[in-house]
Image 1 (cartoon, rainbow, N blue to C red):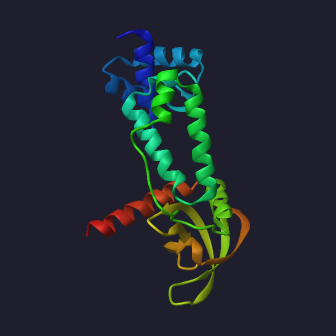
Image 2: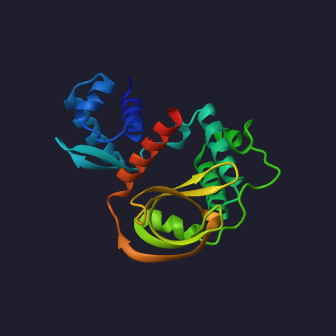
Length: 230
């Protein structure tokens, strides 16, 4: 295998492998020695890839300028187009604008033949109407998830009962017609779901729960998976 191909395969592996990404695991996956992994990681760094970590502690790929866009094959381009098309049809205005921007950026960096495949993809998403209308507190919820900050919400449940909750927002879940916040509810001391369209007020408390979001979300998703498998 040529040097560039070998490095690109290593980059792809680092992109999809669950942490911790150690040289030993990379060596097993690639079928090479640990010493070869150390050497190739240094070559990637010299090529412009930003990789955190060091020998004995594991690595994390931060930015990947070394990956040329033309490595997208036809099926990957179809996946990009279909995925971004789905996001643009969701009706969440911020994400729809972001998807349009991403598609333009990707197209601008592709060779001419691949750019044409992207712009005239055979895969399309059609929805006669958007799934979600404007939601007043969505941007603030997304920001609280990113920054791992507790928020206080005024919430009205399905029965019409109003309550005040302090929650730790973990993720926004998109379903067919409803946006739901997956959260840790401090009132119930347990995981809860809150429909975004039923949140009547929202205030940031400035209280951080970092770095617990990733672990809480993993535990909640595992719990949901167990419930649905029973």
